[in-house]
Image (cartoon, rainbow, N blue to C red; front, side, top):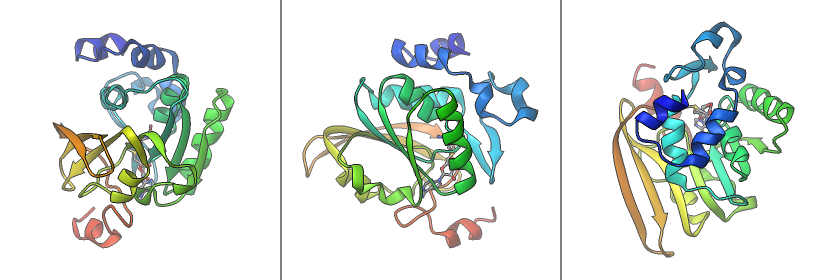
Length: 211
Ligand code: SAM
């Protein structure tokens, strides 16, 4: 899997080392273990997915994580992305809408020896209690940049978030240059589950889309 990520252009050795070390098969349902090291997203229950390894690698590289960084992850899902961040030495805070997913993810992370702090809630408005963050990674797609997340970033910090409609999104790599200035780079062609919440998609728009 890691060789494939290298071939696809991932260069950050710290990201590649963490992805080599974390056993992805522990984060997928037992019935799908044979597919754990393929470069594809897989279902994890609650109609949600563990992201494709390339997407995890690309987003983590874009976040430019350093040991000791305080990182907020929105969308815990399986816990795999949180494990990668923790393995890279970050202090990880993670929020998930579904209690069932959060509970399972935190149990797995704890068994692997990672001290990740998590809560059930609407991550589209961030987690102000532990702000400001060096980095925020959102693993579900929003219609626009959530301003609460920008507020909770340190100056110089990065927000990596898919923005677009419900079918396809661009990955925004946002650097907070000052309180009023953002530097935004975009990469086209990603597909995420929707960020449901106050600064994401409303439950209604999601249902109206027929999913
Ligand atoms: N990072 C995850 C992993 O490593 O498995 C992948 C997560 S999945 C692609 C996106 C997750 O975002 C889903 O588990 C979904 O329930 C969650 N989510 C969607 N909207 C959310 C919100 N407003 N707050 C917190 N979690 C949310």
